Length: 365
Image 1 (cartoon, rainbow, N blue to C red):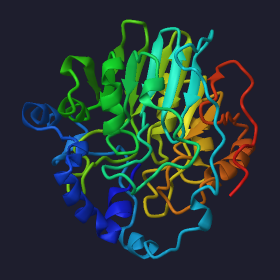
Image 2: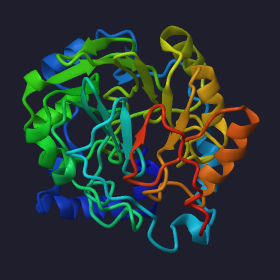
Image 3: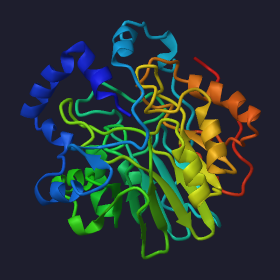
Image 4: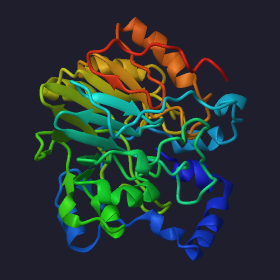
């Protein structure tokens, strides 16, 4: 999640930059929350109360605690000292007998299946946020762009934060996308940016859609929040997803703190051939919205996942931990719980059924 309150506003600079951005036409990137008839429909949903969406579990963070944590210094290794290793793959000619996953750093993924191409939370504009320069991508993570993508049968968006819903990327991809599947309310942003409303499917938790090629996409609960401005929070929904492609079942966490929803999803929709679970950008500032150290391994157990691939790391500086701490802590946690890990390099394709990628490419500061 891009921490709007914690990352941008704590310095006081974001408000000034936003004012400048409005004059430069960048204000449009902030998107648009639901209004009018769409807002009236959302207001009837069980998980939308008192003007905002709610998590299944009670929010457990402490605003008093967060104030003091702002004063902590950042480690020098919060960003890698040189470019991350990456693999150049021709995504347009990629073929495989089983679902093939290509990770672009953070939470951006292409999944090629026999039922269609799936693009998840793409961010190819090399920074996260409405103003360039505030949250820039690490070296080695900026080699893939919208022009490299094959035709997209379905775009999946998990929530509206800038590091998952990127205006520049979606504008560049718009003509390549057949259908967009998003949580309730997020479609307002896409329509505001010129997408055809008929090509947008909004889902609430535990709703599904089956696409013409046979892909079934199920929106499932996550424990997180939403906002693209400082003043409006939780006006759109956040979600994880179950992806059924033929006989294969995959799970994508989006952004989510740990909770009983993982076990419930595993019971209802599992077991899974692969779980793509966030493992980075955690902090005591937001303990309930992201998986903390090692919790991704436990979530994989809860989901009944045969294989775990960590995401939401190795691209942006969003929390005050060393850039490679998430994977360094996840490896022993997964081993303790007998969870098989798959950790490919950026751009390196992995096909289900192949031996998992175990090469330690992240062992540098």
